Length: 66
Ligand SMILES: [Zn+2]
Image 1: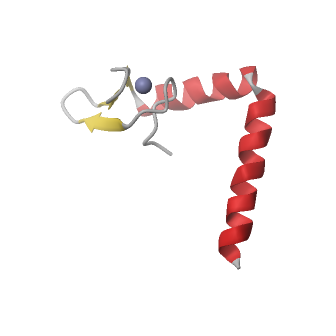
Image 2: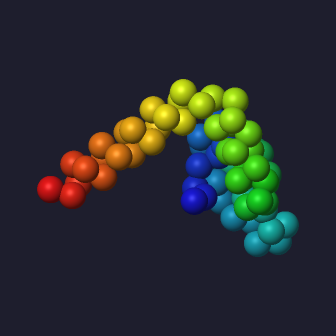
């Protein structure tokens, strides 16, 4: 999944010249692999937050199912 900056949550736009996603808010420029890498590190550092995120995602899925 792309679209949100792993650093600040801003909008990412793909730069086809540099083959990188550039954040419109903080200017972070990352490749797809780097986004996954940063997210994985963030999840490892914030396991509780990830649990909460998954719970919310499940709730969203559950409520849209009906
Ligand atoms: Zn950003």
